[in-house]
Image (cartoon, rainbow, N blue to C red; front, side):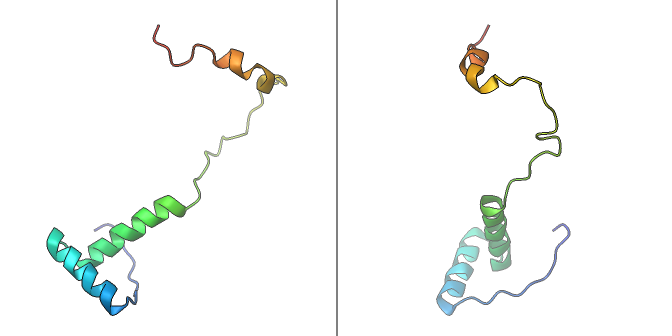
Length: 79
């Protein structure tokens, strides 16, 4: 395990027993399943960070939205 912090999570009895059963089936401790579930939750619900350069530059063009289809024509095609 990498850098970890300890926390306490209180689970209902049924959830805890089911979690322990899943851990036994997979051969991993219940704590590993909790870490995995939290990691998946954070990826799904945390806001995505934009690159710091996002929106920092200006092309000087004011007609990009009107010309979008023409500018994108042919993209993704093999040459």
